[in-house]
Image 1 (tube, each protein chain N blue to C red):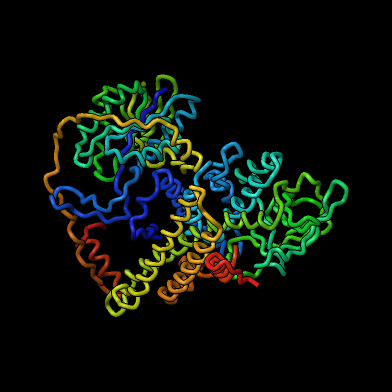
Image 2: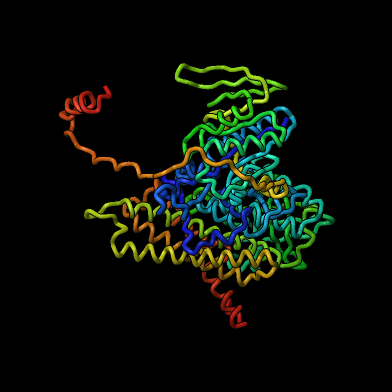
Length: 389
Length: 251
């Protein structure tokens, strides 16, 4: 396979520090050499390459912004964005695996957990010795997570958890689950080991998107947990939404990685593919598509970069993340669809990256806040009038 | 033990190099850089020797521009302890002997006992700096090494040649040039990258010796002649054998 070349039309590489570029290149090299050769078969088989988990941990991509004392690398947010970008250049399933572990499991434990929970879980999660999942979405509560039915009832010093979660990445292979549940006092988060009696996580099969990612239900039937497994700093629905803001931040970057993978493949293909005695890239219709793709990628890169700088300065707001996730995933999906078309029949082969990215991005378009919900969030930010319901 | 790994940054293969307007150098416009392939092996081997001995210091040394800091930081992220850039903004036209002299002076200043270098830099393809460095220092030299073990004061190295595998014993100090297969370079982990920030990276101004050999002109390799189809199916076999035997003279 040809060496990957990312598009840098506006010389944005100049805007990254030497350390940020080193992080990006380290993850890029790993993805090219270790992940890309495996992904086609795993995608086809519907499996995640769990054999790579120790290498991912060694690379340091699990919770890299967590302080070193808890096993993280203490990186800045732009570096974390670049990590997501490079992993999703490989596959959205890979980025999802890492996003969940870092943004949806390590982040809430770090932000809302007790010191005991941090000491117990963060080093294990950072080193990949434990895998985590995040249970918020339910069969009948997606865009309206506040409508969750999963509940936790006090029983002496313990809690009894009941309910069902759905579309949970990594569920089946998790050692620890962050479970959100209604209580008498509002929504609370629990950090529970998955081997408790009454807890099960059957895998959801037959997906045609994110095939190289494990998706599960979480079933909680009278799961008894001590109060020490409640994350003490959780007080409302705001807490899981804060986690999602972290994860969506990574997705805004990741989508650009997927789009860049498609663009690189399609550009190479159209320059080499001869149609009527000249390269496909020499015709106006393919050029118009390439120009549009490159423009959208470049704008997405600038959006992600500015968002990352603001995050590192402590100025990022959730409404900014809504815009970046919405736009970047939307353009990545459109680029992948156009790219699939430009590859002709080859576009439907898993020998090429593009078709796989196209299928994956359909999930990314919907999860972590659907495109339409992000639209309404931006509308709310602009007008001050919520139109969600 | 103090170990020095000598490295060079070379253009990546992402950009097709073109000849500059002066007709004797490569146009640097748009070029990206990386560590030369064999130098990565040298750095890895240096770190492995240190790890095996249970102590010591690995210094990564280069003659090059200030921008070499990126490549040197990568070496620090992969386990080297210190980086030194001998600043030479005319590094692309520096000849082997002048480079070796600058390196030799710094190796002496570092008090190193072992120097590891790539067998060849993948840009200029001279394979000369390592042996020149050994000569200038008056040290033992084994080139193209595929297996190495180091203990106090001495070492054993294997090298592959046309005659087979040769095994050498040598006394330290020594210069070893590294062949593919000697060591598998590790990935720079993110923690390594963070740790690299805190490691020393020195820039030293040098006054390089004048080149003794200079490039006077640079030309693209001649374009390959077009291929020729000599037949189809089994009928082509006889014609192919004839062409290989009488034209190409390879069988």
